[in-house]
Image 1: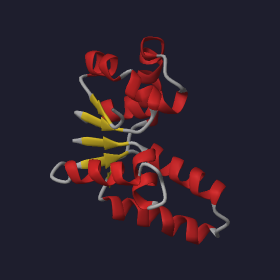
Image 2: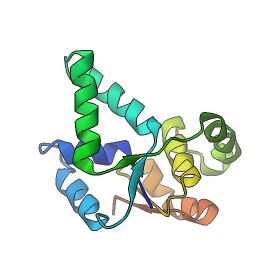
Image 3: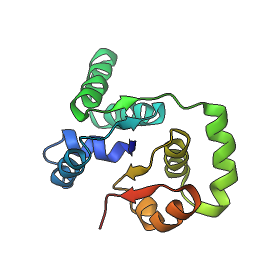
Length: 141
C-alpha cells in the first residue's frame, strides 16, 4: 500500500507545477499498487485550493473530488484519536512539523509500506522513518 502526500496530488493535477512530471512518474510507477490518502489529505486539499482559487463551496468540493479521482487514490479513514496518540509518541523521535508528522503517522496507521511525498523534511528523515516505522519514503532525490 502506498500513502500519497497532498503535494503529490497537487503537482499531478497542475501541469504548470515544477514537479508535475515527477508526480506523473511516481503515480505511474506505483499504478499497480493500492494508493491511499487519509482524510487529512482531503482537508489539506480544501485548504490549499480555497486559498489559491476564488471558487464557490460547490466548485471547491468538485475540484477536490476530481483531484482524488484523477490521481487514482482511495480515501481510507484514520482514527483521529489514534493519530493524535501515536503522533505524540513519535514527535520527539521524528522532529517533524505538525502536518508532516501527521501524514507520516497516518501512513503508518493505514499500513502503508511506502510514503510518496515532495516534502523536503519528510524526505530528509526518510531513513529514520524507515527505521522507526518500516515505511520507505520516496519523492525527492
